[in-house]
Image (cartoon, rainbow, N blue to C red):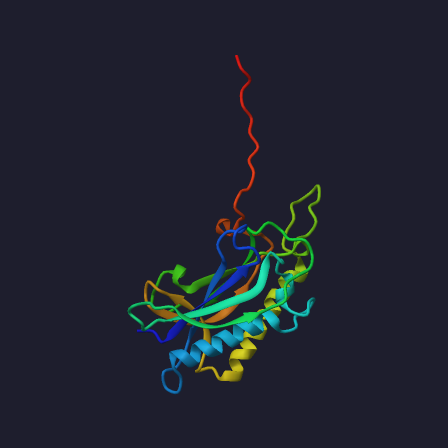
Length: 225
């Protein structure tokens, strides 16, 4: 059985009645059982995820400043030990973050950050990829729509995402490579591989479950015959 944990980040919305489900992502970390435990791995992984959001990046004071203020700025953390047959989610300390001050894009708009590990074990290629969906986001993450093309994730935002990911990796190095390693996890094979590359592209993704609940409807009815 693989040694590691899956950490879920749950961003709370400012108004839980007006908005849909929490904005969630799951990240995976492995550890060497000689000198490390699931708990120490989870703690190191959580600290690295905090650094991902709060450390200085290229164009902003932190990556969290690209987030929409429809979020409260509070993020909850929990982890599941891969060796726990009951799959119990263990809560960890929540964290407060700054969010952006510009207007917000629709909550459904997200940027996909993808990860890849080196192939192993003869598994199918789908086993070597994971991803997370960053958002909701402020309008300045989007380039202006022009007559010749749609809005796309801005180059500045994409630069900052990868700079933030480097901060995450730097944080894990502080704890040592055997305590927590960011990995691609395959639940199908209950195995993982250390991330060897990460990337974003200039196309938006849509997370429908993050959308707002409707509050009004406009109708058209056929006139009487």
